[in-house]
Length: 114
Length: 113
Image (tube, rainbow over all chains, first blue to last red):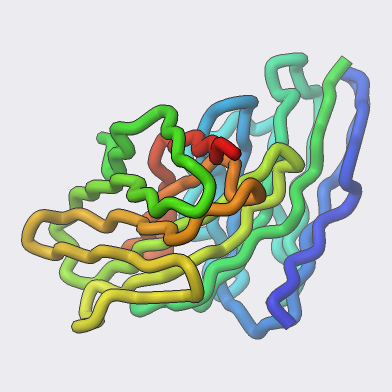
């Protein structure tokens, strides 16, 4: 099973709403990632969790709040977003540490902020 | 600083021909991994191939091969016998110690019938 599952696939939210994106994997990977991708651009790293601890925060605004409740789940809580936050949000997982040979992505959540 | 460089914004290839997509990288970390992903218009990021910095042989996966030249810090993707379904964005990515996982700017490949 090399599947990373993201829900929902599409999300439309208002600027005052609170919503959450979810990501799940059962490959035993201990590193999980959130990326933001705008159209025709590469994915931009937002957060990395390693062994359920936040290890990298790429200066992401506080209106994005990550959470890693256990080794299989990763959430991204959204609050007071701006229209420019509309993008494809991708979750990935990999083996933690050096010599990573596996890194898989979910299908993404297409977020529209209105 | 940009660690992954893909210098070909767009490439065209005739169906059934081979094509090489370029990727160079920059790191002083002796341990790293290099990936290639395909992203069709649907948005999913599809894993194609992986090369570890200590791997002696070039990685191959079916029609995909990675031409790894460590001294030149290049990791080019070769797609043999191109198919119409290969038309997509292709991203080179590098993972470093501490799970720092970054992408290049991508190459848009179009396969011509």
